Length: 135
Image (tube, rainbow, N blue to C red):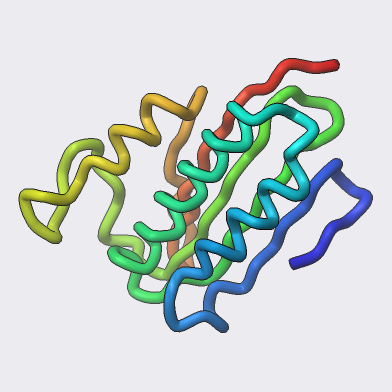
């Protein structure tokens, strides 16, 4: 993980180095770096990041990276997760892993101000944005 001065917070985690989702590490970083923006925002970002990273491990052929940042000129936190699977695009309320799965994107759809998918030549990026109040 690294923090840069380009944005107020910049998390860039190489998921390829982790055989399992590093969820505790991600949540700890989120709490440490976004804590001043309020507990509600931190909880929402933790939930969204956990869901998007978990989905990359469950549905992506190979998870690549997770990024978290909030540009100084905006009032939102942006979460981005990359994987190499261009065929398994997210659909709210469905899962190829069984009937007891597939509800995570419902949560993403409710918590995120907006979210989406960007298909790339090497895979895809799933992103979500959560607004926060400017001080």
